Length: 225
Image (cartoon, rainbow, N blue to C red; front, side, top):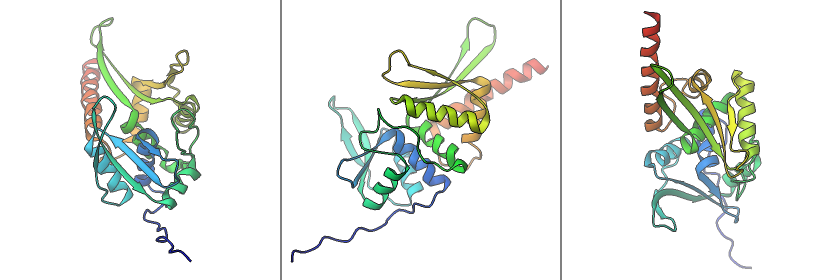
């Protein structure tokens, strides 16, 4: 009889928590599963993103370097584990997921931790002064996906939990879809994904939001006066 390979080990705790849900959000946006049933990859230009993933998973992963076809540099974590790979399949992640991903099996109580991971992965926040109205400060929170079914599920989940609708654009181009929340609705979602100061997150995005909200607060004080 030939020698058997090492028995697979469960190296990651699959019990749901805020940190696990956040890590799943990062994998949903910036991660991929290979076709071999083992390899899990997370790629980002933000080292903090990968360190956050390691913290949430509870493993000090090696961070490697990856170059694309244009020679652009990114950082990545790669690891093999059949147990965690199968767990990701069980909640709805698949190889080549970008265009076909839909609803994921995320527990309701951890949905906004998951959403924060999605935002840190492929989300966007921007603010500006609208020239059409004097002293009109606008800001938007945005989530992006190449799958309409996935962005539709996120929109419906947010509406179910906090009652705001947002708006999906990109239906005509059908290359990627953007779910946007403007000002009042954005503020509702922001308060849910950053529900305390200790949540794991990408600091540069959180700081950008905090700066915009300070401007908005000052504007509201002017109106009160």
